[in-house]
Length: 295
Image 1: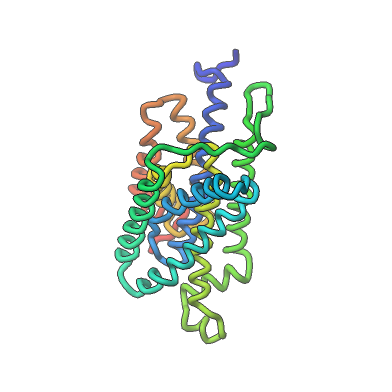
Image 2: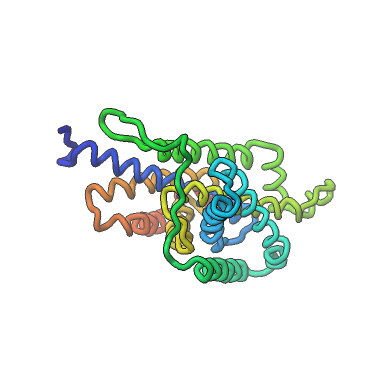
């Protein structure tokens, strides 16, 4: 059996795969957070609840309407995005001129309300959600067995992250969104509906959380606690990458996921805190984050 630093290669690659899968979810969730903070300056503590909501929408579509995974992959983020847009229009839009603390407190309270509602309706135990039949089973790579659905998560996450980055950074729509947040008066002078753009931005960030949720449902059980279990880690990822840095959020999500996987191999006891240790070190050396810009 091939060994690396005394560790069987199969065990090492298996944990790297787990880390890459976790990193895929970290990247998608931190991407949504970075978009919302970078463009709206809202610290969205409801992001974890929106992630959980995406998983529950897929679960309810399956159990109540018989709608399978592939259609839910479109409908779940759409539903969560519409809910997010309604939240922005009805509540968050009134907080933009106030201190950032008000937005943080509102979204934190909203997360508690959403999580508490689903805990009351469905309990704290998880609900199973089967992967699509087309992605069951796995592929023998010789040195390890790769589950097909896990491979799909990694590829789909990369496509979503790169596509969203390109939308924000490389298109006219993205340039307009950035201009609307930096100088809304000038953008309004060109006849552009700035409030609609801001609503779209929050809805997009929420939809990314919902998409991550429906993709996570077959891997983790659908549970009201799944959002609160991951959101603190995702905030740490965003801080390490740089608050508001979209590319930094993506790269850091994958890197820290892999680093977490390696830690589970070489020092399992530290795997639950390694991301926060890295965050503390980065903040000491570079307070703006690895890819962030100093204020």
